[in-house]
Image (cartoon, rainbow, N blue to C red; front, side):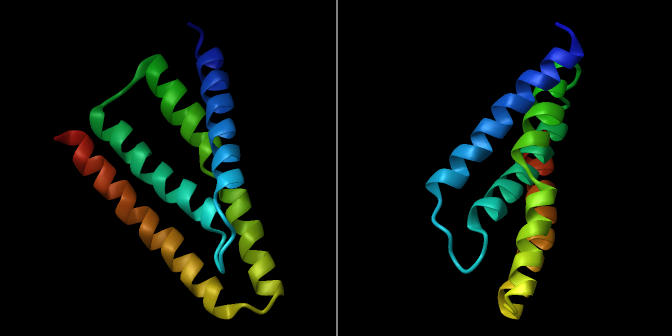
Length: 115
């Protein structure tokens, strides 16, 4: 199957999955849905890479699905909203949770994908 089609199908599935998570997760003092999809996505992408997946399956799962499921732009908009609302503690917690947590999740996924 054409790589473009695989990316498109994966992207559609990933975007719909993220939409579903955002609909079912309650809003807390942090943007919990965005944080959750980004941490889970970091883990899953690490696992996909650790598994050595390539070709059309990689295009579908990593480029398409994970690319649409995770969201850097929403993360940044959420941060700007917290900053504009002068919520300094949630800003710090969100940044640390996202970036440090994302690195840990990606590393864990990569490690587990290799075993």
